[in-house]
Amino acid sequence: MKKNTTLGEFIINKQIEFQGSSGELSRLLNAIRLAAKVVNYEVNKAGLVNILGAAGETNIQGEQQQKLDVYANEKFKQTLINREIVCGIASEEEDEFIVIEGGNKANDNKYILLMDPLDGSSNIDVNVSVGTIFSVYERITPKGQPVTIEDFLQPGNKQVAAGYIVYGTSTMLVYTTGKGVNGFTLNPAIGTYYLSHPKMQHPKMGKIYSINEANYVHFPQGVKDYLKFIQKEVEDGKNYTSRYIGSLVSDFHRNMIKGGIYIYPTSSKNPKGKLRLLYECNPIAFLAEQSGGKATDGYQRILDIKPTELHQRVPFFCGSTEMVDKAMEFMQKHPEDSNY
Ligand code: AHG
Ligand code: MN
Ligand code: MN
Image (cartoon, rainbow, N blue to C red; front, side, top):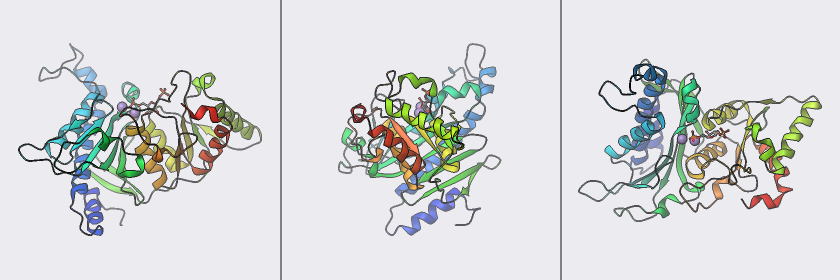
């Protein structure tokens, strides 16, 4: 596909390739595209909102200023619910999943959506990149009936689509429907996304490692050993560099382009890890694999984990295949740490 293809054109062209496609997934992706533009606009003026809202933190309509993660959650929800595109939503910002009934008629939509509406929220106040992550599954309960928890607790290998928006120096929407990964950059002047990164490929090996090293003393032995291995390599003249933004989306995006590994392990502080299987790890793992990378919990493939609860956390090792394999070698020497 040509580089100046817009996201709208791309979605239509892809739908034509699927014979007998109902267009539901296309409509869903279009809704995400729209909500992402609205959130992008708000993220971009985050610094200004504080100035304008300083007196009592209310906006011009007298409404309370909302934290951006709550705002992003509301915008994505509204856009998807108003358009009656999905039959259920689960979000990092909601305790329970949301059933979308479909007004007077039964909701015959077949997809559910899970999301981390604002990833890296601690970076908002300091003008550093944040993101939105989404994950789409086909429901397993029959159409027309309300969705149940079973629809949401499917393993990541059943994802139909997944992606993220990174609100960085430019805003990009990157997604997969299981046929590779494509990245689109927003031209903010006209509000259109263009295909800027076709068929993204995760380098098999990289130089970057991304981990919150301040937690070193709390890490499992396998992770400590892997970090010592990297130090040894550096001593031997190999080139490594440490980069950690604290927004999974931004850290992953950079590593997918340049090559690297991202690790958020278990620790005595976070005994099950910190990242959420359903809203963060599964969608990012799907993108990692679709671009030729790898994602595991240190022992097994993330996408094969059968979730047991909505807000489940898992340790996360993701990125260039050779680097993830190496880290797993060290983890596997400590099988006791696989029972987190
Ligand atoms: P969220 O803002 O959605 O809660 O996610 C933050 C996550 C992830 O994006 C990031 O990589 C990690 O938390 C950072 O955690 P530490 O501050 O513990 O390193
Ligand atoms: Mn997050
Ligand atoms: Mn979040």
